[in-house]
Image (cartoon, rainbow, N blue to C red; front, side, top):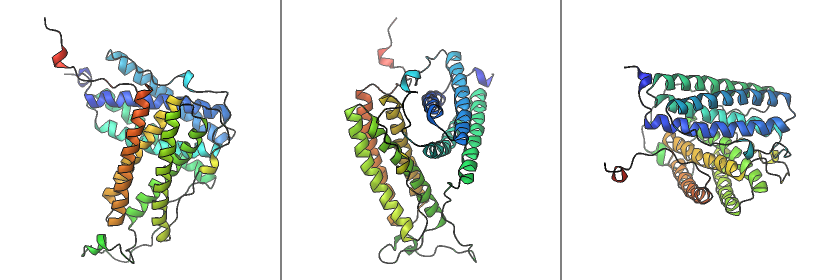
Length: 333
């Protein structure tokens, strides 16, 4: 049997649906950036990214039509205001594209691994290549501009050592053992993503119209500030570098470049991603104080995600995924 003749599995349907939403968000964001950006290198990156997203959306639409699935609404021209002034400076958008491409690499890899059909595998194989190309380009541009912040450096060890005592994990009173490379790296990368969410949230609060959504953003910002303070202090205590905040990259504009629904979906995506990357940091940590802080951040993130869900559902901002047939409700012949 031709593997491409098989019906789509539930993970394949989920991945295609969710990616369609994210790609249409990317198109709207790219169009706004291209309408406001002045930096030619940032413009070139977003032109490249826009072309990739438009190609992805065409491929996704073909998959849906082939399977007789309704094409999701996603986000369209009505969700972006191309006449609005910039809400963020050019450098912010360079960091945004860099961070989102990093997140995309994880998403595309998972989608590839969860796909059975050869045509779906081939599609996500290409998506991974596309995301790697965007990521490479953003790093090159950040480095050329002197804006790329490297994770902490460590001295080269003189010998191989083994953990021989539980104090490696549990001695956190008084003098703590130094962070290992996995712990320092996870904390640094999480802070890099957290600072982007922080700046985005500050900007969105300035322009959002829906009062309930603004309350969620303000509550989420308090949690973001708390987490940033806790994890940055861990690096500072170890005399390791902390990534600089992006707060100053927010302009004083009060004109919304995007619809509340689009901004809500970005905020919800980042809230979900935060839970994921704190989970990754948790399992890579062997110092109990780090584990406790990661657990607290995850619990706080789950509470914020619940608040977001209430706002999004009440406003009809989330498209429903296809669901299994309710056998009890099927008509009787």
